[in-house]
Image (cartoon, rainbow, N blue to C red; front, top):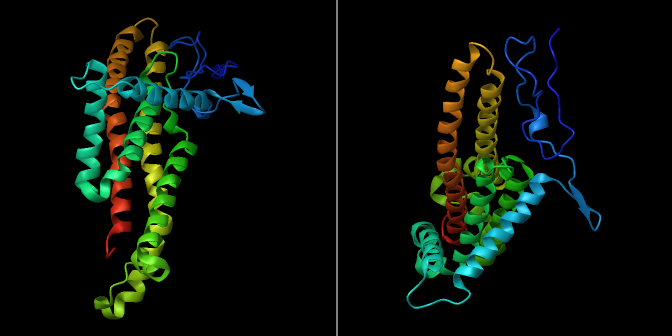
Length: 277
């Protein structure tokens, strides 16, 4: 009779599976499932329950704030190592994303929020490969949705602030009288795309990539343990090599997804400030 995968009662346990289960032992492969993404509260503060993703998000905030405070609290003309790293990271987003998208004059005021958003997302992603944490916070849909909502509110507010009520709707709807008879259809498509599809895809793009990456890491990590029995050890070594390769690949994806999220945010703001959508 096949053994059922055991769901750990320990909320910090990400790889919830039967530790005694190996191939040829009469138990099936304990594939990762929803139990790998659902966590019980670790503790409660002021009536608010904190589970593992929430705690990691809070720690991510402290890491970003603490790093930049330490790097720029007492800036020097000849920067030290920490200040140099901070300046390189800040300048990468400022020049490589914000200035390239919005220009220096328009973009300067948006640099702090874009830098903060990039590093916050990046740190939340990077927990996936950190021992004991081993979970990307953005694989929980609520976090990308919250970040996308901030960008969405900013975009809508800037659109109406720059163009007024009527002009704002024209901007969002892509109004262009030169389109002639197809203008109503184009405006309907643009309204649907910008007001509904845009925030949805902005959030899901980040969520889906981190969710899929975490599932792959779980599958090969669990498989490495599951195959450690008899001749299966040879296959376990292959699976472990895949874990290492996927970890390296995830390092790239984690930074890339933070970059893409911020780049799209800048593109949306650029659209809000442009005369024609």
